[in-house]
Image 1 (tube, helix red, strand yellow):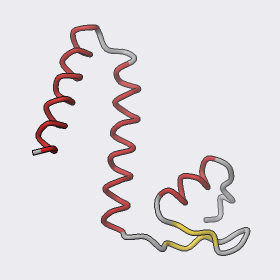
Image 2 (image 1 turned 45 degrees about the vertical axis):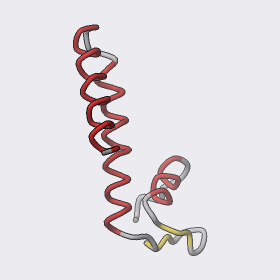
Image 3 (image 1 turned 90 degrees about the vertical axis):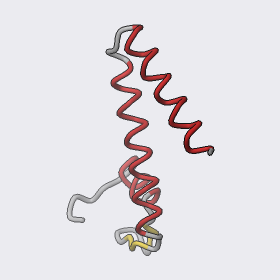
Length: 76
C-alpha cells in the first residue's frame, strides 16, 4: 500500500485481519470469509446510522422495526 496509512486506517486494516509484520508491512492472517462478513456488517451498521440521521420519525420507526425483525430471524 503505497499510501502509507496511519491512525484509523491502520486500525481498519488490522480489524480486517491484517497483522503488522514491521513498521511498514502488514500481511493478511485472517479467515477471508469471516472477515468479509464482519466487515460487511460493520459497514452496513455505520451506513445505516448515517442514513438514520436524515430520516423522518416515521422512516426511523420503520427501519427500527425491520432491524428488530432481522435480529429475531437471526436468533431463530
